[in-house]
Image 1: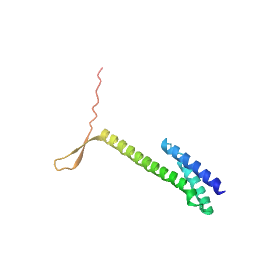
Image 2: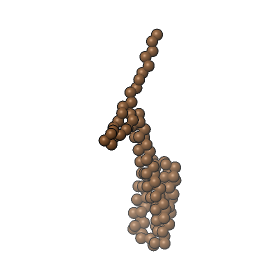
Image 3: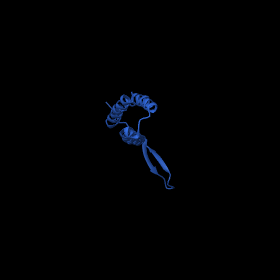
Length: 113
């Protein structure tokens, strides 16, 4: 059973890495649950550090990828917010150094027959 759990955990970590590398975040929830189940099985069997080292390396790599993905999603959110602000108006600084929003005035063209 422990060897099977170790093999399955390697597979789950590989799938997690593929999902993170392709920015396909949907399967991560199910993979997390599966990973937790397999780690629970490993805890009971108490494998040696030699066996766990490759798993730890994969987990560390996936953790770095996850942190980068979170940072990228946050940056995209910030960019979308900035674009939204541009549509609302122009942010300038007044003489006292405070930020002020200058509204965009949408002028419409009146058509006459």
